[in-house]
Amino acid sequence: MKHPIANSLLAASLATFLATAAAAAPALTAYAFWQPTWFSPAQPIWGDGWAFPLGMPSDLRDVTLRQSLRTSLGGERLRLEISNQYGAAPLRIDTLSVRRAAAEPWRAVRFQGHDGMVIAAGARVISDPVGLPVHAGDRLEVDLHLPGPSTPAGFHWDAQEQTEVIQGNASEHRGAPVLQTLTTRAFVSGLWVTSTHPPSTVVAIGDSITDGNGSSIGRDQRWPDHLSRRLAPRGVAVLNAGMAGNRLLRGGWGESALARFERDVLGQPGVHAAIVLLGTNDIGFPGSPFAPSEDPVSLDELTGAFLQLVEQAHARNVRVVVGTVPPFEHALQGTPFEGHYSPRKEALREALNDWIRHTRAFDAVVDFDAVLRDPAHPAQLDPALDSGDHLHPGDEGYKRMAGAIDLHALLGEQAVEVKQ
Image 1 (cartoon, rainbow, N blue to C red):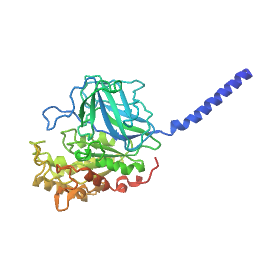
Image 2: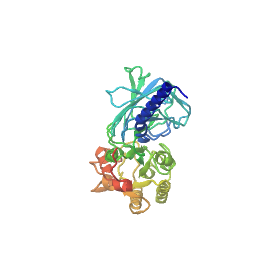
Image 3: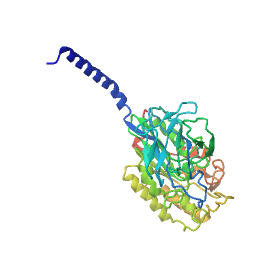
Image 4: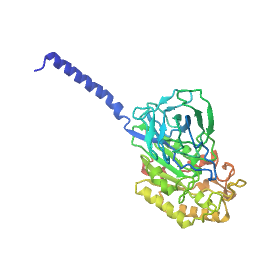
């Protein structure tokens, strides 16, 4: 038999342990889920032969990339995803840090408790949790130091943000000079936040119109940004998987939508619905400076590609909403890239839109063409909604696109208010 004092001490210790565990249990279980809240799809880098310059140094040595992003939903903690996708060699990062606003302190971001990380070629990694509470719509800054030499990977060309290239490690030398300001991004590819609910996600996949080309830089005026503001009170995140130059059937500025749909859309945690806006470049690129030797695409090829996306999504119980293709008469007129439009291409756009409106394959249709076209000249964008290049909407056009999406048609049975 144990000594009474020993028994008392054991009982007291056990009681203390159980009380501590009970007190800690809510903290451990209250945020049982990780919700994706921001995403940047990766594309391969290109050399000097492509229509547009890369917009980023191809060799990065002892520099910090300072990049901005906007949360779709908030949470008490966050994780960052860093990508070496399409990288041909291991990527070494020295330090990573994040802050919620320019006036707030930086928080160190670690991997398995370490400041740095070596990421295998083609791989992505997830950081340790960071205790930084964020809200829906918060703008974050991320500093990533590359000791180098490094080649851009996890690269995204049309970021609609400003990326600063800073000499040295900005986490240690806050006054280091800014060498360049870019509108591309690299390496930082995803953000997740804690949630008390299972993740609920909508992914917008498309080309530069979904990517927000023509919107105000750094002001979050893309149509997925506006849709995110509508869905945040319902606890639904909107991820933008738009990519400049993207096509349904063929690559170019990145893999085709058919090739990346599984990874960039269906692979997102909690994906409930996909909004697809594609076809502009499938129709416009052949015979233009972007694809001068390509044969025109056919209506059957386009409709077959849409139906394949639906098959893949419905096999995962993911809803599909498809947008009609906006008008683009006079697109890029007066620039070296003129040739996107022709009467034959306009006839194909109209035929595709007619099929999209009347097929029963989709869960819903959003008529972006009707929202954006000039009532007096339906083959072109409404001048009040045109960014100026006759291909991409401006801020007001993107706002109206998001407003045209029926949330009940998008979410189906999930279209209910959810308390965050």
